[in-house]
Length: 241
Image (cartoon, rainbow, N blue to C red; front, side, top):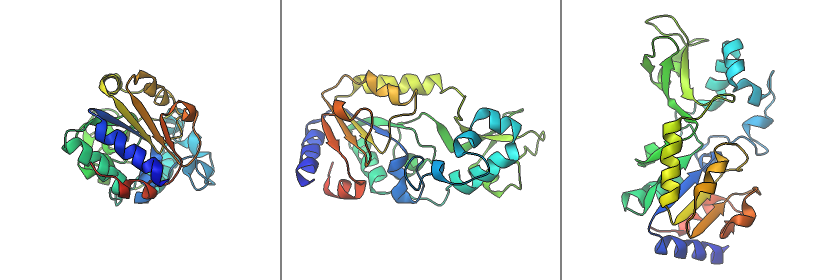
C-alpha cells in the first residue's frame, strides 16, 4: 500500500487540474452510513425496502413513512467533515482542484471548505415547499412532527434531494461535465459506480490519470490508472497538497 500511496502523491504533485468524484464511502468516517456495504442503508430491515422508500412514487403515496426513514437514517446534521473532505477542500484552496462532483447529499464537502461542489443528488440542507416554493433549513425537517408542512400554505415541504425516478439538475450536470473535460487528473472516491446517470459522467474525463479508491470492486476498476482498494484512513493521512 505504501507504494500506491507514493504513486498517488506523485500524480497529485504533477497534476494541474484535479477533479474529485465522491460517493457515500467518503462520509462513512464521519458516521454517515453508506448504501450498499454490509452495514449500509440498503441492508437494513424496514417495512419497505429502503430503495423503494427513497423513490418519488413512494414519497407521493406514503410521505409519512418516507419521512420516518429519512429523518431516522438520512438526516445526519451532527456529522463533521473527515480527513478526506478536508484534503479535497485544501486542494481547491491551493488552486490544485477544479472542484468536487459528489453523489452525497450531506453537505460535508462545503462544511470542510469546498466552494465548487457539484451535488448530483441534491442536499438535505435545502428544503422547499411543494406549492409555494418557500425555503426551509434542514432543522425544520428534523424538528417537524410527522410530515413537515409549510406554515404559509400547508403543503408538504420536500428535501432538495434527487429521489429514484427523478431527473438530475441539467445545470449541475453541465458544470460537472465541464469540470471533467478540463481536468488532467480524476480521483474517484468511495463510490460503487453503479448508480446512473451519475456513474456515467466519468466517461467525460479525457485526462492523463484516473485514480480509483474504494474498498470494494467497481465496474471501472480495470480502467483506472491507479487502483487502491483500501480505507481512506490508510491513504489520506499520508498525502499532502
